[in-house]
Length: 347
Image 1 (tube, rainbow, N blue to C red):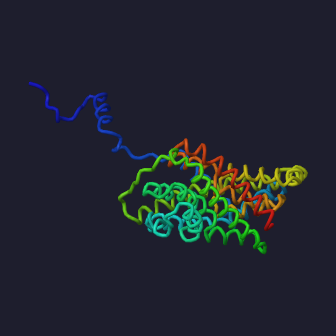
Image 2: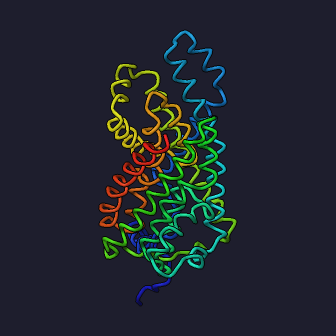
Image 3: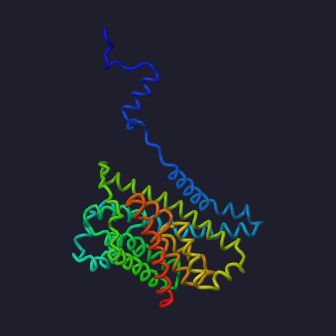
């Protein structure tokens, strides 16, 4: 008699093969290593803020370490409320506002739709982490890629939370708010028109439209948690690097770098690309780098929301690596040029 095929397999190797044949859906999902790194960094920052008084007593004898801790914690304390507000607002818009809402406002001609998409960043704001999937959703719905990319660059850079945080960080220097708005909007619109002119839409991989099926509340909580952990981790990194520059880098080195406007702009542009601070918090990091000229600080705030290491990875994952290898360097150059132009005029 042949054995019945519906009986459970008792042999361990056969059972393992059967489990693999059924697929991995029964296995619990494991969080990516990067998520855990962001969790650790965020917990470290919150912990340091809570015990800052005790730590200051412990390191009081070492002036350099005490100064580093003071700068690090002060940046975090100032930036954290705006970071949380921006992440919550961005998650709410991503979940509650239909992705095709922007299309109803856009002119039919792509060249005219580009600046309208840029200005819409004021109405439909979002941090960098949310703007990429929203732009991908727009492309998948048939919006011209140049228009969607303009929104991608403008939304995290000119939204009200970012502008208010910039005003708070640069108290009394409201020309910096106007300069940031102008340079960031200029970057987004110029990139949109350039992409129309270059005609490189064939490089873009149209993203698949996906829904979680768990309801809006679950989507909101998941999006907010994801963005907060990632943005919080990069805020820790940016605050630590800024504090290190302020305390450990000799003043003579900073004076040399700041002595040349072009060199200082390039240095802070690269700094913005590497540390990848969320746009709702980056103004506080920029303001702490007071050794650099205002135009260089502006470049830090314009380049970061436009292109940094995390955005490069997200753009490659959403639109494809061929797109990212062309779009990212071009955005970096246009953002620096916009900051230089606007900084020279307004600052």
